[in-house]
Amino acid sequence: MTDLIAQFAPERADLRERHRRRVPGRDPHNPWDIYLHGCERTPDAWADAFMAAHYFQLSPRFVMTPNRAEAFALMERAGFPVVAHAWVASAAFQAPAFDEVVVYTSEYGGHVGMDKLRCTREEAEQNWPGALCSAFLASGAGVSYRLLKIGTVTLTIRMTSAGDWRSNVGAGRSEWHPEPLRADLGEATETLLGPLWAVDFVTDSGGKLWTVDFNTTPGVRSMDAALAARALGEDGLYGPLREWFALHPLPVPTDLGA
Image (cartoon, one colour):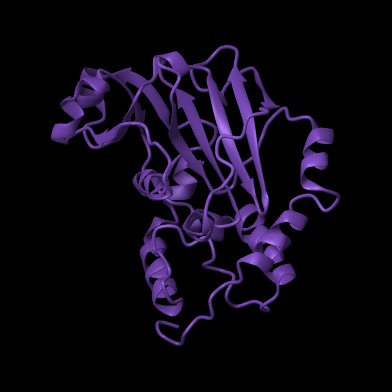
């Protein structure tokens, strides 16, 4: 999966720049709407095209997905508390927070934790000198909380792994968490991140939640299907997505960069 994502890297910058020029005020770092402006301007058409691009079409999905550094920047801009992170070669990597780290072995991310390695600072410097790392929060190992945004629906999920420090690897389960991690996202965050995404949190030794991952095509394993259907309604993902696009219509593109 990691190599598959990276193969679309050459076209990312060009497509994003052309999209930014065509759409007034478009942020180039998270172009979740990059393939939507050519379709009919209705919530139904946008929802259909969005689902196709994110879940069924390989190239659009990977072109839209932010890389690791972009994802951390997006979470910070959205106001989430982001785990300490730094490039191995930077001076910031010598801070005590990076005594034990999570190394991202691919710039573009991997599937269910496959691009993440846990190691010491010294091991990262020796084996991954050009990589991006985040501080490893030992107290949160094997457990994470996911803020899942599906159109107008915001859900909180607790994910656990029985045998791995990554909560989505190995034997484990997902369950609804009754307390919302963040209910009011605000208009700026809604339009920045779009109608479908997830942010994963882990806790530090003091119980504070820190965001560690951003996902533009989220899935939830071992989830009770009846509970999911009750939360989303009879139309599944499409209902909340249509409602979101009705509340947040796309801006009209210009002819620049077409």
